[in-house]
Image (cartoon, rainbow, N blue to C red; front, side, top):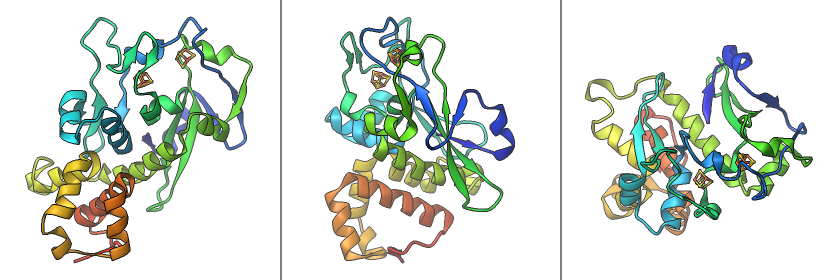
Length: 259
Ligand code: SF4
Ligand code: SF4
């Protein structure tokens, strides 16, 4: 999910969609383009994508990151992005693609669920003010756009079981936007603070060890009910990781974390 500045919104490709607008789309095996969209692409993974995929593949986060991602820096942001590493073949296929389709379908990334719609986070000059904007952007080869089925954004999100993914990505986008300023100082992103923030976002298994196996819970007071939730749910732990980044990197007060 891109961060969008108000002055650039009119230059973005695709058809803007508002709540209640409809678009034509249906994707199925009978189309000649079946699986073409799973090749030759830059597929950004968001923290909740990594959490779900590593579980689906029964890998711990370290191994998933080593095997499946490239970490890249994008202009205008001081936090790295994570790209799915495509197969080393001519058409750079997604490593999870088989002849029969997506092998990780129940846990496929947010971008795959949302396609051919793209979401962005529109920021205003007022601190903290943002809204999700959506664009219908099927590539030329995508034949699904000629199908008769009409959908609203909400219907498409339900159909693709994308509601939780969309929410988690939006939460992450609001944190990522903070990194339009450099918080790292002289030690840079590879210093202890930068490594900690990356772990909290993308390495849920190491972050769990950090919260429950280190002296963290002695140094920081976390409400008991919240700590119980973190033990029970990876998604809750990831949301806590987002809160920790805000608190630890940016000094933004948290209602549940106290030193
Ligand atoms: S290109 Fe479009 S219609 Fe074809 S398989 Fe991909 S999403 Fe479906
Ligand atoms: S994760 Fe699945 S849907 Fe997404 S690009 Fe790979 S094969 Fe296609």
